[in-house]
Length: 168
Image (cartoon, rainbow, N blue to C red; front, side):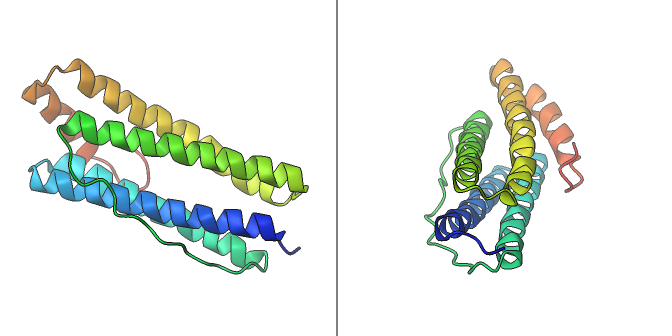
């Protein structure tokens, strides 16, 4: 079943958002590399890969539904951060934005009666709940440290243990 034009456009916009998120996380990884925080850099690089994978899933879905893929322009991500907490707060802001946009896609699919898109989008909504909770928890933990380098080193070691599959 072919996609409605509005849905095709909205899904293409989501491809662009996912790629934008991937670049934002890549920028955050580069920041942490420069700050000699390899564990946090590794975690952010894995997030970048995950977001690129999401973009690929949306592309594949568009193709499967006989849609045309059109990746839009992507603005440069934020590149200057004051602290590790600032980086993770920016990541949380980005996750919340993506969550709301996927909700909007779900609403559009419902409005258009695009029943095939609903289960596809539902999977992303479930994942976004997990992503927001994870990043919010990291922000809370870093915020409680009050700048303690020992505490940051412990969190960094934990984040550096990420497998790249989204598992911590």
